[in-house]
Length: 490
Ligand SMILES: Cc1cc2nc3c(=O)[nH]c(=O)nc-3n(C[C@H](O)[C@H](O)[C@H](O)COP(=O)(O)OP(=O)(O)OC[C@H]3O[C@@H](n4cnc5c(N)ncnc54)[C@H](O)[C@@H]3O)c2cc1C
Image (tube, rainbow, N blue to C red; front, top):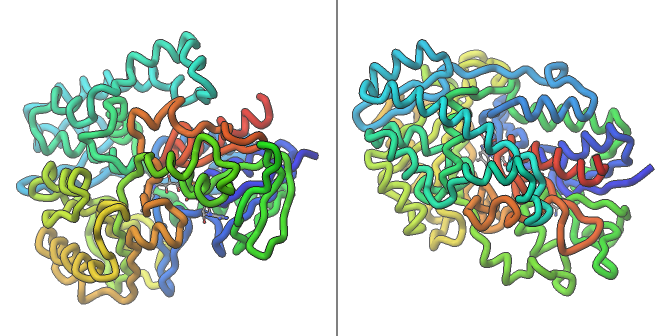
């Protein structure tokens, strides 16, 4: 029986472990934390349950396929709930609730952006074609530049649109900047500014607005919990509270991993699921670093950070599942964060209110959980979060109370936790506290992203946000499909 060691029980590592354990591999997963899920792990504040990171699932088709590859049926393990509306966007002088229901959406567009109704539906149609054309890029593993010579991949290159940015591309179509912001802010899920993210990522808003977003009953962390159960049912083992210290390497080949107490485990297949830059700098001894030396990693571009407030409340609010409270001047706000590496005064705030459709997250029915996230610079910025944290928190809560009907939030908080970029770095081993890992700049996608087969060392593979195709759950699950295909030669 072939043995595989996986470092990290995030969604990427678990997805790979699930497929390989179903295919008869002996799987050992080593996780530094006390639970599985990584950035997607559950967070408990007394009787209130939160998702630490991801708050929605996009394109569940990839996850369904992943479960099929492990001979499982997704719906036997988790219940997905479609969101309608997808969001409430609150702008300075208007609100907008997009939905995948085409009739409802037509009416909503007529109400809010009447000049753009025809353009909007035309956009969806064209993005659908673009999405179909781009699929080969996402499904190929880009082992080398020769991948580009495959006819389907070659054709899809014309749709990459790396010269234009998402914002520019959308601005050509829609003159109303608020609509452009509503359809371009999704680049923040890649940890990037819409002014910098390559034009091909307009498909993100297309995927949301056309295919929908989904909640998972009980929280998204039910996905890693289900994966853990499947791996263990297949005979795989998951070791918690067991951080890997380094890879064991001889003659450019890895043979296992070593732990803090100097014990080891050996295997000839090693998959890394930890943040790529953390892995290259910390788990590969310096003398074995080749392409990805510390100097090289320091030059890579990393995503934004995120400041997250988790609130357990003794009250429920009539807020949509997702509310995006835009800055009065969203363009300036984004530029302050991404170009000046600074905190803006004028904040765009994302509020997640899963208790609206999921009553399992609190013990008391009249309680709720609210997660509030704000994109901020990563830890390369000159911000001392120990001193900035409380004032920034206050600014966020004040703005919510001023700009929405929720004017008593502060009075109903019974438990609270905040995660700043410093903590994302320290507690989640994310280089520079970049919440979304390596950025998706044109020099860090496709064959330029660290490949699923780690090119510096034999026997080593990568899964997760730091390899191809990239960050976000949909891509992370796809990376596990690509990586395990390489391992099993299928
Ligand atoms: C606030 C936030 C919100 C997000 N929202 C969304 C969303 O709504 N939708 C979406 O699709 N994506 C979202 N994401 C992105 C998503 O969470 C990531 O793309 C995904 O978790 C990456 O998975 P991964 O397996 O690559 O890495 P991780 O989830 O980071 O998993 C890596 C694992 O490795 C472990 N590890 C680290 N070092 C060691 C070591 N030395 N030894 C052993 N184990 C180690 C970690 O503990 C962790 O369990 C969000 C992320 C954040 C931070």
